[in-house]
Length: 197
Picture 1 (tube, rainbow, N blue to C red):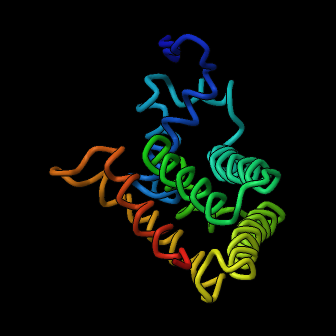
Picture 2 (picture 1 turned 120 degrees about the horizontal axis):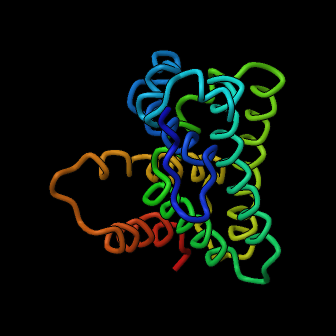
């Protein structure tokens, strides 16, 4: 029987979760089957159950793995003494980096979370709302301190997050600028546009 091939410092479960991210992005959570996943991993479907309980468990792992990374980073940014523009830039850079380097996980977390069921669904929605509120609060502090233009902070957060979500098309493009140039351009547009010069 074939065994799941693993890299150094990687568990079999991590390999399965990574392949699931790719599969869920490509086919969507509903359409992807455990047989598809087994084929992608290179094992019999029955042997997947030695490592995971269900397809739903994989969606939980992906959604909350990404959400927890973003929340942890938000904690770090909020704890710094930086001004608001520096904090916004750090958040934007992190989002861009995640979309470039962990694209499939972030994509699945952003698009397929609606297939979670309660209590996971409510928990995930609350985390998303809380994250956006905390991001908006940083912008609002910048507005009060005259660092950031007088704009509606929640709207600014939505625009920033949707713009970064557009990196999906960068991944599909055959003629694209490199990741550093992409990051630099997006920082100039998204963060530079907020500055109260």
